[in-house]
View 1 (tube, rainbow, N blue to C red):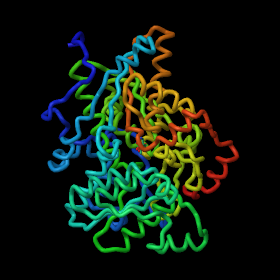
View 2: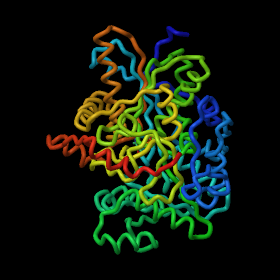
View 3: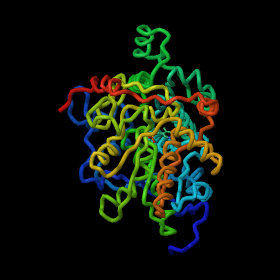
View 4: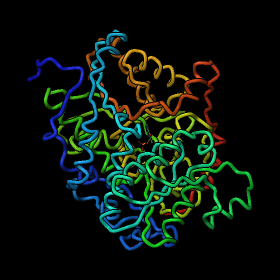
Length: 457
Ligand SMILES: *Cc1c(COP(=O)(O)O)cnc(C)c1O
């Protein structure tokens, strides 16, 4: 029914919620390259990965042929408490921009953790519990992942140990308290609770820590204790599988009104929200059923797609994790202290990397101040205070809508609004005070990161 009036918010009944996740790898002709064992350079096997991740999650990680995975009923029930997430027609923004474009956004900030990360956290906690484990360990930088995981673990009665980069631990005390309120132990990293942490502290006393170091500590804490596993909030294919819930709900809702987006936009840190949003649409494109334009938006300060290399690299600075083939800036690349903490990762999902390399997806990079300009514009007209990460997608959605105004084209634009910005008010303060800066790495800066790429192939 193409002429049905489209409401501000498109609802789904509980009975319409997805009962399976979709694995886009099943429809890819060129599969993403396998994870490699850093010692043997052979593809990681089930047995290689078992000491680090839960069995069921290893199966999902290694499976690139099964298109649909049943969502266990316990996870479906948890999803029902905060899903479907709102799919909003941005009528107010369209009117303000005076554009013929039709803009939709899928809002994932509608839960206490404030982002889409809960969609995968609950799945990973469920499989850990089902395997009879005592608990899980992880790292967190800006804190969104740690918060989501602590919520998921408290729901299933699992112990949750979060290694939080020391400077964030000190600068974001409120995030830390949310995690502790949900029962997680939060340790500033580097710490004296692990061998690798003690070593780093000895070498660099007074260091404020890094994500790479926190990963190394979390992996050690998981693999040296009985009944613990390590979990990761992005980049991995299993995470993108869980995040397909975003795209599946969106597609079900839009199909009810026979709406087909022309352009689908999302911010890209490790690629999980963007991958999750586009998955079912990309599936149609891969099967030749429908065409879409997909745009990944990354910060100019950490441009993995637009200026990175497609190569095997370490997933962490400590070089303990498997090698993944991805668009990367090198695991030694340290992006400048931008305010979109969730987008400061050197690499990118290997699924999205392959799709980008096959020209099935586009990427653009945007500068911080123009991102905050879009964030404030959006907040003032659509009401939601967006996370800095999410605002990268807003920036490009607005830019595309303004192009439509020039050409008169009535394109339909869909973007992912991944979360809220309540814990990012220091960044907003800088913007409001007019002292926010843009840092773009020089080619020389990038060369330093590329020089550290492992020699594979
Ligand atoms: C973590 C995070 C991101 C980036 O992670 P992806 O894996 O690329 O999705 C984006 N937005 C928010 C709000 C986040 O917390």
